[in-house]
Image (cartoon, rainbow, N blue to C red; front, side, top):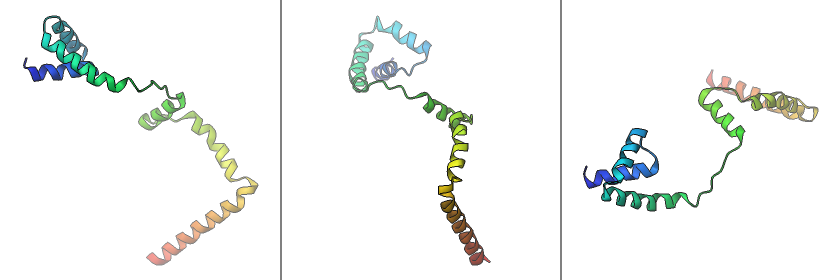
Length: 118
């Protein structure tokens, strides 16, 4: 194996990009290959230094639920629970005037659009 390929392989090893068989092969070759060990040390020093200052952060469970809903189409139960509350809020007595005004403006825009097109 040439020097450049060893360096790339060592970098991929440090980043965790190798499949298990390739990882075991690199670990087996480390014992007898000084160049590979040097490349591994080089990449560990360069790459792992970039990761150290970043603290691990666990996002809230609701974030995972929303990601899954977007990726796989599973509904977010919290969203469904807020839907009746949103409708109740819009239909509340204090908001009925605003709701009526918005509907009136939409109807006027639709009439204007139809008038311009036909």
